Structure formats: structure tokens, C-alpha cells
Amino acid sequence: MQMPECEELGFGITCIDAAYRHPGMVCFYLLQSGDECAVIETGTSHCVATLQKVLAAKGLTAEQLRYIIPTHVHLDHAGGAGAMMAAFPEAILLVHPRGARHMAEPDRLVASSKDVYGEDAFFRLHGEILPVEASRIREMDDGSSVALAGRTLEFRHTRGHANHHFCIWDAVSRGWFSGDMFGVSYAWCRFRGGDYLLPTTTPTQFDPDAYAQSLQLLASYKPENVYLTHCGQITFTTEKLSLLDRQVRDYADLAGKFRDDLPGLVEALFAYSIDMITGFDPAQDEAELRDKLAFDIDLNAQGLALWQLSHQVGPNGIG
Image (tube, rainbow, N blue to C red; front, side, top):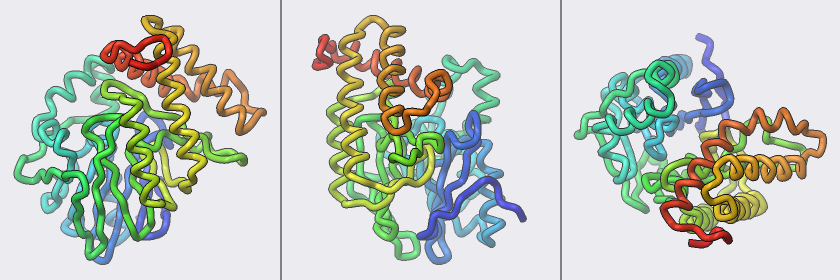
């Protein structure tokens, strides 16, 4: 059987494309240890068939899937959780305590997303969002862990992008499954001069101070790898962390400068990001970059605008 678009990353980790909006935008991970496996992130309900094909190609059964683990409950990360749990009845859902109720009762998540996309577009993108039985949900406290055939996965709460966000530490790969905490780096962001990481300040719980603290927590483990949901594996370096941290702080400053001017903030983020990217590769075409960045810049600007309103940010970005 031919597997869907995926990449073997070593350490028993397979990166699987979620085909969200377009290939290469969102992925999820199959982690295999001995005769057990776990899925980290779920993509959407459409990803269930993809996962089943990957498991079959690897000779794995549904009963061997022990855990399904969204890093947070935004629908590009957890939208397929209910459908996956229905398809794999032996699995347990591991989730942040603040996200558990949304997995059992996803109505509010669905309603808010439909307001953004419209009902028809929402269904095409996400499929049906199913609730998860409360008895099959395990809330993971900060510092808690589970074993996967003797392989320990540690959960650390990481605020800054969302209050219901955790990252998963895998000592075997010395890697973080980072959700949205270590930013976005698509295939086109990988340059000869290094990997460009775009911050994720999307609505509604962006907090730059918490974001910076979470980045330092990730760095304290001395990781070698980061497994991004957007999109794929990158090598950890302190330079990448510093670049991401600086951008988060600069974003906060821009939010203060363009208070009550969302179009102005969008344009400022475009200019800032394009300047960053052309620092890696001066040959990049500005018009093409605007097209590639548009979706993320728009969401980041919305999140920054909400943050500045809720924290009464001054012109220097400080509340």
C-alpha cells in the first residue's frame, strides 16, 4: 500500500501532511515505540483516513494506537480529535486541562470557526467535529508524563500562543513537539542562510511575556530537534530561538504603534517580515512573499489587535 505524503524523520517519528488548505501547511506526527504508537496533533477530521493508511502501510493495528495528543485545541491542531477517537476506540486523548471541556463539548469552537469561515467553507476545510467521551480524556498537568512502550513523553504547559497549549518533550529524539510555540517555518522558509521562523500571534490569547518565558523553558531542555506543526522538523539552535523571541517583542511594539489601525498593522507586519526574509535570501520576490505570507500575517495582525485592546497597550507596545 502506498502511504500518503509523509516523511520518516528517524527516532520512530513520521511526519504526515494534513492537507489543510494546501499541502505543506499543517502536519501531524506518528510516534512509534516498540509495539505502541501515538499521534501528536490531529489535523482535521479528513486526516482519519490518512492516518489509517499510514498505520496499515506500517503493519500497525488500530489497537496499537495508545494516545492521541493535540498540543492545543485550535481546530488545525485538534479538529480531527473526535473523529480519530471514534476510529480508534482503544486510544486515550491527552489534552491540556484548559482544553479538555472543548474536546468533550466542541460546540463553542465550531460556532466561532463557522463565524470566520462560513458553514460551507468550514465543513470543506474541517469536516465534522465530533465530541470525545469525557471518560476517554486525560488532562495533562504541567510536568506530567506518559510512557509509550517505555519511552517517556513529558508535557510542559507553554502559554503565549494560547492558554490551553502544551509542548511535548521526547528525550529519545531530544526534541520538542512544539505545536505553535516555536513559530511557523514552511518549506519555502528554509534558506541556505538558515530557517526563517514566523511567530504565531493568532487570536485570541497571545501574550508576549508568556511567549518569551515559554521559549526559555523549551531552551532549558537543550533540545536538538523541534517538530513544528507548521510544518515539519527543524534543528534547534539558540540563534533561531533568539530570532523568534526578538520578532515576538517587535510584533508587540508594532501593535502599540498601530493601535486602532488594523490595515496599518497588517502592512507593517508585511514590511517587517519581508525585510527579515530577504535578510536570509535577497533574491526573494516581494510580491511572491506577500502572497505566501498573507494568511499568517492576517491572523497574526488580528491576534495582536485583540491583545492590545485587552491590555490597553501604549504606543511603545507596553501595557
